[in-house]
View 1 (spheres, rainbow, N blue to C red):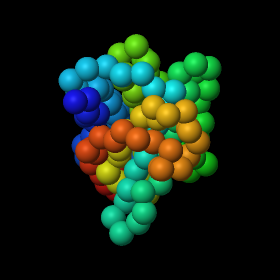
View 2 (cartoon, rainbow, N blue to C red):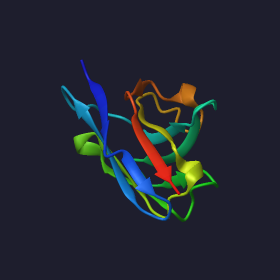
View 3 (cartoon, helix red, strand yellow):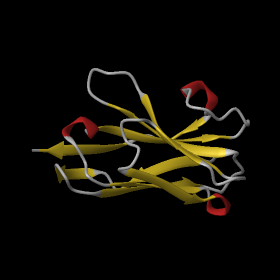
View 4 (cartoon, one colour):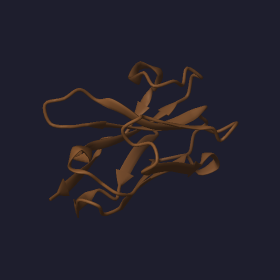
Length: 124
């Protein structure tokens, strides 16, 4: 059974950087796109970034555009999120997700495989 496993979270000061990784555990799989979402305490899960494998097109939430970069390797079912200039508001649990049905977009329902999440905490 394939699973997604995130890593790279931690505690960082405001203005700092972190790089999150997400890899398939068990076996690789085919997907149309992979994405990152995040959920801050007391808030709903929100879209962060997406990468479409066929076009390598990337798309970002307004709140992270210019600071975060998504990349990855579709053959390895691996995706990364480079986070620079981190802000207090970036504190959240970050989840990676895969779209294996071709729905894509920013809606959570369009992604059918999810990781367990990794905590990112930004301190002042």
